[in-house]
Length: 499
Image 1: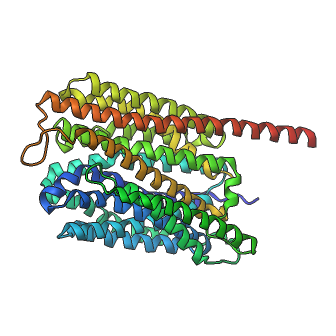
Image 2: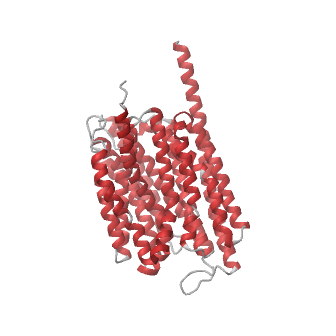
Image 3: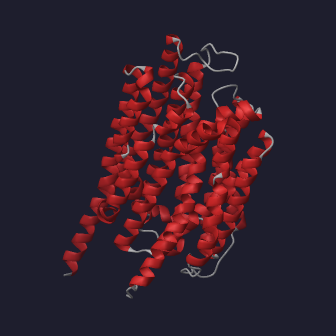
């Protein structure tokens, strides 16, 4: 086994830093729009459906593009796919920032989502290729820290732009900030990211598999991303059984394709690894809880309590710093202790979610942001454990040649969980505040105790569902922890037998 020279190791870490920074931009664009939805209605005349699609269109396109892009990256060239995705992301971000109408903004956001779906699996595939063993654990630790920062700092960035530039320029810069950053990263990526990668052998495009996979993701996610909690069309749920039908067809096609000696778009033998199977379920439930928690917390503080976007955005700062610091610190331990870290991470996170509910019930409205910021600071320990450790655990048994598609299917789980969590959380929230009296601008009176109480109740009910998602994830984390220890025991027995 060859040992990499120090200079090569350094270049690998630099290439990883460039790729991971782009992954953070794609995640930022999921969450930073939470605080600009009201300004979009005010300045662009966006309807509630259009503002919903600004969020949901990105997530939906992101989810659909992931697996085909991961497949193409594994079989063709990850660097080329990365550069294509980054170029499209840059152009789409510029179009979003300059959009003269809400319809064109929605279109730009969908294009952004496609680009993000092209980019993310290449980053995960690069980690699989560049690092092995403990170094891979450290890379996933840093990656988890970076994603945690992006997720938590998103509302802060949007709030700061709104505070600095006002409603119209503020939301435009929230999208436009990607352009100068991407223009800086493009030459670095061309220079630093390696073009060579392990080849899996003969490549099959599997166009039918790609279309069935895309249709399944589209049909399952669509009803959730179209759920706003107000004036929703009940007929949208017909897409879920259609999605299940296409998913069954996809599984059957892929198994037949593989049995014929060809290379399917998604090799279902990956799910024979308990680490991968449990990891995908855990990450799906995690993203059903965390982004939705940020959304309902933003709505509660911004609309229900009347706090300005800057103050609301700053609530997540302690969460961002602590989760990033913890994820970076525990990265070196994820190779050996991933399941233990995920288990304890969920215990801490669930406790903190209960703490947020208690804050909404007992802390005066004027002190709510600072109290929630303190609780979220403690909560940050949980994702610091979970994100890097579960990423490492999920991909630990996956062959390097399938790293991109395996990571992208895990990302599909994240986007699906994101869509379900946001849909369920926001639907519960809006349904419970629909009767609250509003002024001419459509906002409630934060000085009205009845209005505050209604918003607090809505927040608590939405959080109850998100806590339930997290408890189910904790159960699967326990199952994975036991499976890991059985695997270790079996390995120890085999070694003792052979010696």
